[in-house]
View: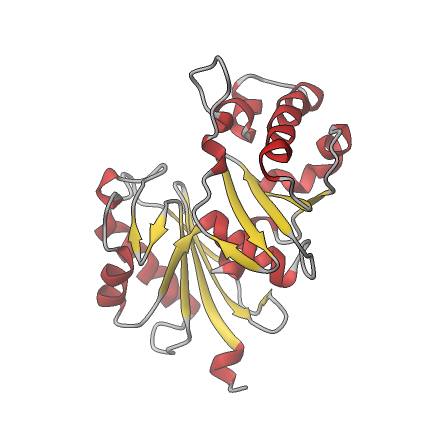
Length: 247
């Protein structure tokens, strides 16, 4: 394996921050500093492109043509972003991959942020070697999801937007980590909301494993033991680096 093939650059674009690092593809570890800049106000495509170019310069890899993957908070199909979560509506039905390739002068791969977090956990983390259906969920501002069957990603599942019978708000408005903060919930009260959510996923999909990601996964001992599920549920290994590593 060539040196270039052993390493790649991952960029994780979020509504508030843009993170990047160089990844050892064999180990799934960062082999550089993690560079982070604020997502430009309004998060319009031109401004986000310039911010990504900035983090690549800070990494010192803008001239080194390592493979580059970009994670983004949107439905992504064939390089087009079809939705926009906490970013400008200009990303809806936007040829994002082509736009970044032209702007950066290099080939890239553009993908949904929760999907790439799922890939990171399957290849290098909590779901490595898992068979059957793994459902990764990221609990943060919203709820992102990744469906992975026998190591193969089924992209753009968007399970944070499941409806609740008799309610106008969707699952993520009720059970995301932001809901815990917004409603000042104890771990126990938040776990009751998570119980509804993961029980509903069990009913719909009969998964073999749940993996819980997002920054709150570092507090997994506070809430995962409070859940009563038939499916094993584990905290993600890579937490806030999962988007970089998976991308």
